[in-house]
Image 1 (cartoon, one colour):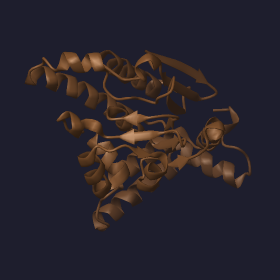
Image 2: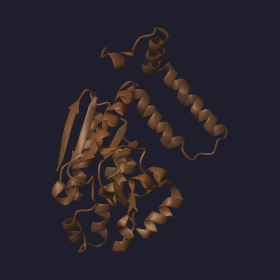
Image 3: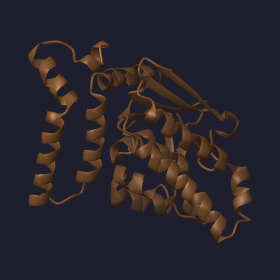
Length: 260
């Protein structure tokens, strides 16, 4: 259901159900959760790319899974929903930088995968839709990640109308970080990976925590104290000391030179 590759510090996870446009069910959700956990624990992996095989990135929920869910009661639906919530949280909370490679449509739950990644790069062929309302449902599980990406105002429109919007609109509202022609997609992602691999792994983990913890907070004495503590800790860390030393000595840090 997925393929996994590791090379040169980069882990690549590819949804591989092209016959159903990479739609997910409970089995795929469990497999993704396990794979995200394994990638995060693997010290040889310093950045992760999430992609889809075939014409679509991810069409959301699998039709057969939806048929099964139609007969579920509350407890069974809650179990399934918690599985999806855990998968998205695992992706969102990875210490490693993550990139969504969005070459085609991302609908419903597929948009949650895009929004839970740190960076999302798409092509003009990408399309997006929060289709739940037209099924009498709600995009509840994906909402924390999508609303963080696009804000409440855009969510109000697209959650309620369930209309399809294109890649240019996705870029405008923040669902995509960058929009590039299909022929340039992999080259652009490789350029991002080059920058990411030049950074320290511990620094990336701390930066991701910083973004999660600081976004939306009031700038007050508590926040100032918190951010001062964070920079003091990272400066005093082994990686921080090595990074500063390499800069002053005009050399690559050990993590970027293969000496760490």
